[in-house]
Amino acid sequence: VLDETHRADLRSWVASANTPTTDFPIQNLPLGVFRGGGSETPRAGAAIGDQVVVLEALVRLGLVEGAARDAALLCAGGTLNALMAAGPDARRALRGGLVDLLRADTAVGARARAASAHILVDARNVEMLVPASVGDYTDFYASIHHATNVGSMFRPDNPLLPNYKYVPIGYHGRASSIVASGSHVVRPSGQSKNDADAEPTFGPSRRLDYELEVGAFIGSGNRLGHSIPLADAEERMFGLCLVNDWSARDLQSWEYQPLGPFLAKNFATTVSPWVVTMDALAPFRAPAFTRANGDPRPLAYLASPSNESAGGIDIQLEVWIRSERMRRESVRAVRLSRVRFTEMYWTLAQLVTHHASNGCNLTAGDLIASGTVSGPTRDSRGCLLELAWRGTEPVTLPTGEQRRFLEDGDEVIFRGFCEREGFARIGFGECRGTVVGPGDTTAITS
Ligand code: MN
Image (tube, rainbow, N blue to C red):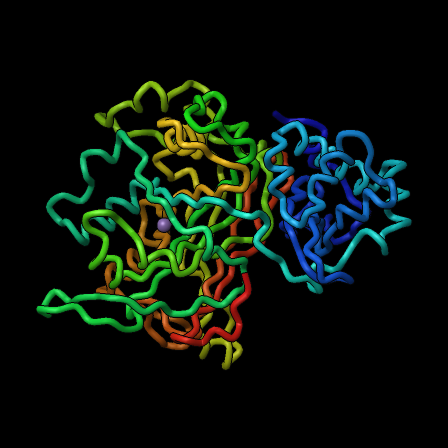
């Protein structure tokens, strides 16, 4: 639903929010949790331009009232979980209050501007944290391009298994190893076995990869034993972030049968720290993926006209990389691929509904990731396994270095943004992580 907060002509008294290239104009206002800027206690805030609005300061100074104040108070515990659990009305009330006080043309905006030294902190001076206490993390496999590419490498005769077009495939991931953007990722060790060898060996992964994904934070979930009808699934999502599902392909190919991913995936998952709310994304809704002629229709519990017409979200996603040598030689990060989130075979609402269809309870703060976002073309592949085609088509960096998989020192950066004629461009910020050698745990934050 579009309202006053989506108007493209809104201007903020925070000057950096009015530049056309910012990820965080007044129409976005993603929420996050940070440390620093005068306090070491984790605090919740909203991104505006290159600044962070501190929610507790707004309450203290009386700059929010009514339902917006109540919603801001829910964030006092240093996570967004309570606000997520409160449902879409609380989230929208906070958004409305924030827009009012950040606008350049309102009375409360003038008061907030006068108090700016007390309510804003420079985003460069804070450390962003994982925005919610994530109780459970589930990773899906919703790109048919990714599933077909990967399937064709491991099962050339049978790339796409017969269940794919009926059931959104997923696995239960690990919440404890979710880290915020900027955290280092230690190269995992594990078992792997080359086809030519008789026995597996244990050691550092030699096929470390990233996976470009979009994550949905669950808002008000469902009680155990109850399901979430597709018509309600949108309202149960709080907002989205970018996700890097780091993957050790050599560990994965040895361990994944018969029960699926385990240690190849659960050593680290990086999330972008700003949660872009479903409200901010409203102008960028798009039809669900158009299924090919001959593909089955989704079963009834996963089908509705509104999901088909507007269940997609047009997010443009990018993968960038910068090797250690590139940093040393002051070579800028280079883009490896770009892809639209509308390429996904299943919508996020279908993933949520399917997840709860057996009565499994989803809880506020749970993270539901989409699976690797890949498109139909080479330059839209969302992981190195696909991009370098299992190592047979290495990627060449500007320094002449080649990449089949990630090397120690490689920094992987995801970016995401939405653009549509007549609306302000909004972005997700960055999801960034640097691979470090086995045992190099000095720079891990979570
Ligand atoms: Mn994944």
